[in-house]
Image 1 (cartoon, rainbow, N blue to C red):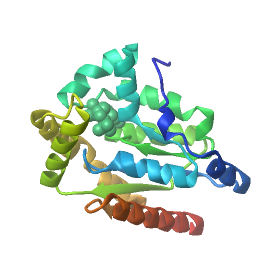
Image 2: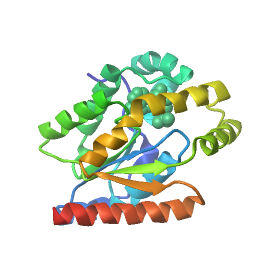
Image 3: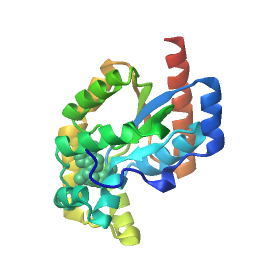
Length: 222
Ligand code: AMP
């Protein structure tokens, strides 16, 4: 089932890095999670470029479909505008389609998915079907008030429809209710690495690269 555009061309990794991975037969399947405004999108692109895997942002895919007014975009828009999650059935079907595309052969970095325990179960099922496993989950941590201020700043520069203060506070609350429980779930599986999201973008990127290196060495040892 495909409702609209699933890809975001700006996140396409460099051919050179992809060729490196293919040559070595290395795969890497990662998740980046964290509250809205923690900087997941920016960091996801850095990690994806460095490792030659696609950064797959469910938020970006939804936004592209809203802009195009595709059936998927029309379904998602009212939830996004209110700061609520798009229903699991819609989101899961979209991710299932996206992960079948050939650029995911050597892995991927999921940004903003899974966000509910139901989505965790769906991803587990999907990976089992591909005979694949997760290598790690990066948690980008930041203080709630810092996040509100960052998101309000972004609203002024980017003008996103879901960046008003009421919607921002709702998005943070929904994260706490529905997504924060995933931290414990992935911690139990020993997949989680927390990274401090505070500070300059470059500093955070360095921490993220170190965290990925740690995950890779643990994955290799396992
Ligand atoms: P983001 O850019 O990741 O903050 O996502 C923007 C909006 O897209 C969210 O507030 C949700 O409405 C929707 N969205 C993105 N990813 C998901 C997901 N995994 N599950 C449900 N809704 C999502």
